[in-house]
Length: 429
Ligand SMILES: NC(=O)c1ccc[n+]([C@@H]2O[C@H](COP(=O)([O-])OP(=O)(O)OC[C@H]3O[C@@H](n4cnc5c(N)ncnc54)[C@H](O)[C@@H]3O)[C@@H](O)[C@H]2O)c1
Image (cartoon, rainbow, N blue to C red; front, side):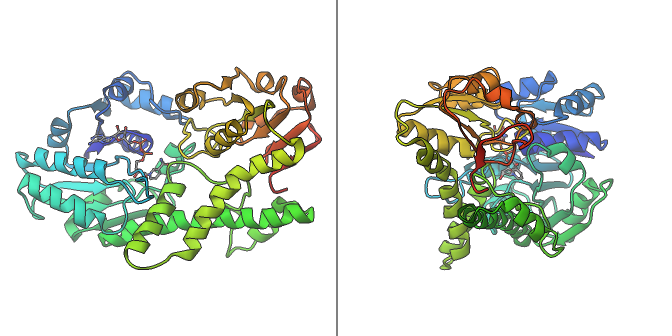
């Protein structure tokens, strides 16, 4: 099929490349010219394992191209996926500015296009958004109705760091649609995927995404809560959660205690759902607690450090891991941001290292020191905090810590191998 992807970030690019790998003709649209240039020259603007090779392959096969010309892209395709960002506003509610402008631009492009066209919202949007924002704008700017424009909501569940793998092998494909014809067209796009397809109405599909993220965030906050109790009892929460996760009703996934969840999804989606619930006159106490526990968990790393080191003023703290998770360069809402801010507030000097995320972090913290490798960051520091479970940190040995001035090592993720390093402790183990 001929597919246009509107918004070529983490989700849009993975979706575009994924559909092209599956044999479709894809045009990726973005308002960011630099991104478009990079994509066309085979350089992914983000770091994702395997994306580089797949992008080069589909470009070479002529299955994918990128452009800033949304009108042309929409006119030459049959289905458009909206993959623009849906960030949080200051008060935590969802900012639909990009969704609205994408819907307007697609509507305008469809005004002169002949034939049936389906618009699929893939961005995460609070229940009711497709009906109240996307459809009215499509209608207003195209002057067309449901006979000519189909509308679907198809949430994306991929994980950064495994984006392509997840996109190509999803657990399920959820398609909410305004009518049967739209849904059938979206389902056809996924015709050569092997996954159960769940067909719903638009707002149910929107809610499935929020409920999924809220539940996963709850699992993590639950594991952190149990971990904080375990720490005080001298129990390893990882052994506890292994025992808990073996129960098939629970599953072992997302029970890893640590220094809180980050990323562009869980924090903003939990907050957006809290806000939506409040708008509806409902106080979502469980979700509010999940959210605030997570914020507390992040900065509790600094509390642990102060217990060991006392006043942090003038102390050098090495921070290993800046990305919100391994195999990604994404730092959005990463625990490292709250922790570095707190360390600087306390007058500490920060030396940081991450295999992929340092360039992004330099935009936020241009004045901290960035090292070329873990060993260099560790050297001369009073303490070391490990905040991302990169494979490379799992290989660290006692000799890599020999250059430290102090001896405090605290893990925010379970990374270090006890057979190779000793004298460290975990945030809640
Ligand atoms: N990142 C994830 O892991 C993930 C997973 C599932 C769902 N989601 C959801 O998918 C959506 C996109 O997330 P992301 O992380 O890819 O965002 P992103 O910020 O990485 O990418 C969004 C892109 O849209 C572009 N854009 C904005 N307005 C545009 C317009 N009018 N026309 C064309 N391009 C436009 C931006 O320039 C940017 O490149 C969000 O709603 C997010 O919640 C994200």
